[in-house]
Length: 330
Image (tube, rainbow, N blue to C red; front, side):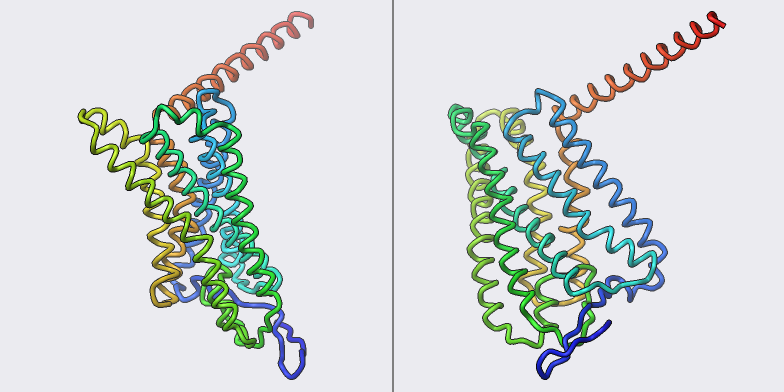
């Protein structure tokens, strides 16, 4: 990559994302694997959004939040996987400093937004299970929209501040990032500027904006489990658990891998593996779990398929009818 002089330091203009370059024998398998994952992720999440918009029975706060989550997951995957697929296909792993910072900004904003959205969804399930009589009054359409908008806004603002600060740093080499995406820690390590204040501010911002959503999620599920265990009927307990079990699975995968990456000692190989869980695996698992474990979604999908087949059949009959008329006219 080209270098530019800045003061007495040589500032690099690009990075090399090493990705999975050390797994040479698996390069041929990784491209089709990630390509299939990306196609299924985008198609599954877009289908889920379409079902939520099309079916009146899914116009509830819970599915509104799930629709937002699917939209987020689509953007999430599109920020990471196309760049990774291009590098696997062409072997070109270079990325400009600006491109790297933009990817970090979008990726980090979506990550912070997902933390907030998951906490809002857990609060929604808390109201539905622990305060069912007051649910409709509390979780109105306007309030659910405000919660979702607040999640998107807070996630974007926090990470954009960090990205702007990162853009002021000088990177003077080395320029190799042992990851498949541009993340905060690898970028800080490559900077030759004084980053002590940035590390402190990043910790404080994470503490303020990431820890509260996690604590809200944890508190909500403690209350939910406590309320469910007090239900005398086993059928009632099973029904109550079924309404939030899918969400609980997603939260476990997401936060479990997130804490391993950002809280345990930094190990590049393990970070790449666990980062792929919350950045690649979670987006593809979300629509599958919410579809396969949810009767309302499966019913909406059945209706949509039935309407599609009816439309195709009617279109064929209409085309055949027009063809017969044309033949008779001739």
